[in-house]
Amino acid sequence: MAKVTSKLQVTMPKALAERYHIEPGDEIKWEAAGDVIRVVPPRAKPAGDLATRLKIFDQATARQRIREHAKPLTVATDRGWTREELYDRGRPR
Image (tube, rainbow, N blue to C red; front, side, top):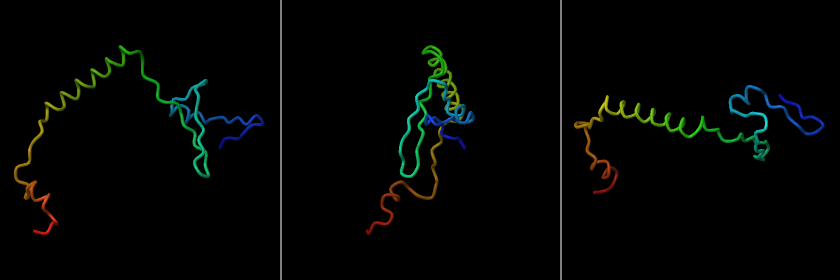
């Protein structure tokens, strides 16, 4: 638990700062939420410059395409019911 100083300052636990990527100089938001105070961390910072982020995105897209082609989507043929039955179920005839 943190203590409030005479200047109304609070020290954030290091584990929380690391978990939410809060660094010295970052601005955090304080919000009243009923009987509690919510501390909202800054938005996550992008990893690297634009070229690096695009490279990471392209790699992830390529991995997803490989996964999609490795196991093609199969259509169920005999599941014991039809799509039409779903829309009529529970309605008076």
